[in-house]
Image: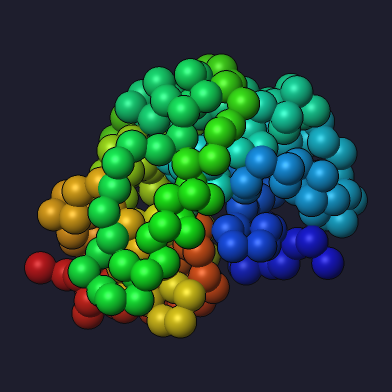
Length: 231
Ligand SMILES: [Zn+2]
Ligand SMILES: [Zn+2]
């Protein structure tokens, strides 16, 4: 199966090292697009839900890194859906750029992983037009009322998305990861900014958290954020 339900109407599409997500609100909303070459897998996931590529009506991008925007141009062409992103990262993607300089989080293992990550995240992407550029607090009237939260640090134009249903589902992007437990992201453009963003998320209410990297937390997710990053 290319698709896995997290809660009713929210699905994860595992794409190797990174996840994309689908929200079914009648029309489909896709969050992130995986590394370059992931479009077929994403459309296979759509087919498994009994839907067509054109049922994807919105593509939201959490940030510009190539493991999240790599298949955007192809998916836009195949679905006709407009793309939505924060202006700071939209400017990058429209030029085909996917990474600013970043440093590892202060953990030895992460330092070892960085060369690998920088290569994955900075691989070249096909430029794509971003139709909607949204700032902190933007609310969408599709997918049951998603809200955008600007969470810079890992990436200057990074957005998390909060879905108010099922006690709150947070799409945390790469603010943090949950590979072998909830933890820092591997790299940050600005770690202090990243800490402030995590504290901002920790103050919200959500039962479920979904990550670009690692497994979703189902139940008590905000409490886990507060224990680690609350102020
Ligand atoms: Zn990233
Ligand atoms: Zn990532």
